Image (tube, rainbow, N blue to C red; front, side, top):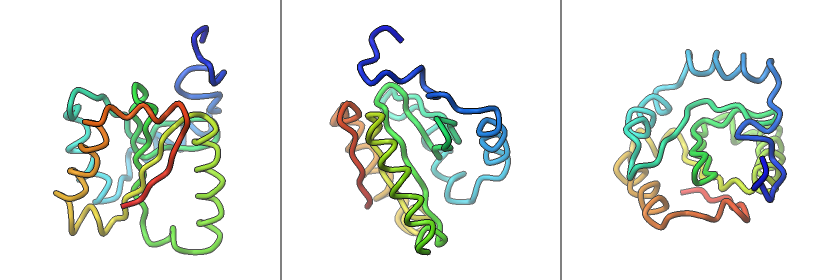
Length: 140
């Protein structure tokens, strides 16, 4: 892209056919919390379009808004194990270097505090998040 100061080629940043296949499988087998959140995000909250299970480089983002360079991740219990935490740190570092802001919600947040989770997302959208240029990571 000509006007891409981050030198990222499009919204997929070189994702391989294998990553696309993984993303397609993940779309077919979304978890209950992911499906619940997708029901909201697919309505284009505050006018922002989200994609689900979006391939980028070697990763698949649960939900991604390219306009804001915003990733929303839904973490299950396996994200608490040491190996997965290390992978998450590496992934977050990549996203930050690509100018993508990442927000992480737990399954429990979405199932037990859905309204709070939606308000958290909406507050970020209302703020017109343009942090994607610098990247960030935040959990609720």
